[in-house]
Image (cartoon, rainbow, N blue to C red; front, side):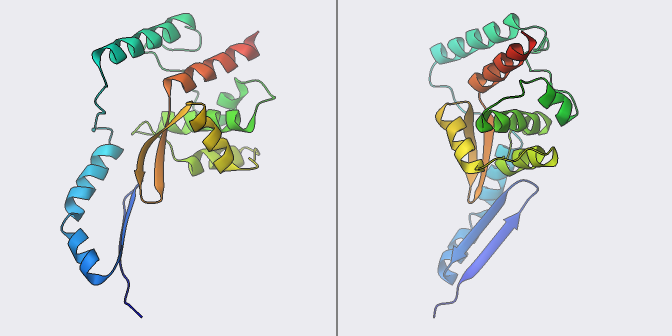
Length: 183
């Protein structure tokens, strides 16, 4: 039987695990400082994704401008959705009957809003729901639905840890849900 060597590094929000033969682990040890720097930069939001084109940037800016100007009661002057400090108050802004995926999106944006990295982990969003008496039949199914509908994006994957981000489309969807309750 071969010996399995393992290195596990846990930071506050990330985890890097290297497992394999002694030779493999030793070879990866040389790149570990570089991997840690990259992970820190991603989690700190310092790594920017290069836009595909200038036209894409302009289109995204126009869409963002439309969203922020159309619903000033829900959106602050800086263009962010106004999120109360209490999850129950935040959840109370939305209609009572919602899909499970919508429940997850509401919790995800709440968690993301409080994250210094402006990302969320699905288990934390699920935990917020659970702490308030809301349970999802399947976290994975709801999350996959949000990803397929492009309401949530995968921000970073590091081993088993996946960081997500509510997309601009997801923010607009949340605003629409809030407006449905108001009317």
